Length: 404
Image (cartoon, rainbow, N blue to C red; front, side):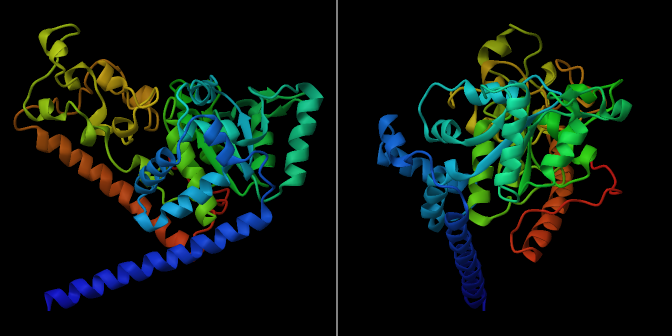
């Protein structure tokens, strides 16, 4: 009986993935027909940058696994990468520091993710475009006219809601971020929030929040895909775009709108200092013997047990390092209102356990509870996605309550 059940389960799983593959192929065929022609030959670019076919196949395998897909999808990931530069992108800047764009620009090693970001079809990006004033405005209007329902809107920064949005006006016509956000997102195929400012408001929304800044989802009452972080990893953005190209919709999201494949686990779960946490070995003050030995930074304010992100696996600076590896605790920057809820950043949260012998289970129980809350959102999204044929989440009703 057990073998029969196992065989039946494997058959169902295989059937599901084959059906998903057919859907993926059909969507990519549609993309081939509808998207603009590629401006550059992706294969030639890889060759010019010194990326061998072997390296590209390694990257394809890694990205397929990261997106939580079986190996049969590797050819589809490669095909999506080839079409990456064909997807029109309108990138808006609101209340932020431009650090998210800067993190994408400050790349040095020519890996595949960097090349994809270099070739992305940015129809409008205020930091990178040479145009200004009315000329820039004309470029935006042309993009909205040429690619209605086909472009992806990427938003960097929060929207100040105070004074009817007049705390932030943009362009020669003096449009508020609120007006511009409504206009552009209403014509986009999908809206992606880059960085915690656009996802949750971030420092602009920190107490006392005089401009009444909000994340895009709460300000515009729309569904967004939130690539959280301050700044986020470029790979999380690349993977999300690849998923959109493959399936015509965004990946499964948690209850905060973050892609599960990138934000489904805690920093604590994959941290290289986790064994020291379990052993009760902590850095007690900066520069002590524990710090020199690479012990756990929990007592120095590390918020890894409360923070969901894949930083420990993908790292930063071309995969070289990340904050905890470099000797500083996690600040919790992928979580809502982290400036308020995670403060002070270099001290443990007073109302939460400090870890050590007999306390590990308490912290992990907290993580399990948070995971449970995330799974509720994942399940709801999965059902919605299935009902819509894996399509882009539609705009939420204006009277929907805040999710933050």
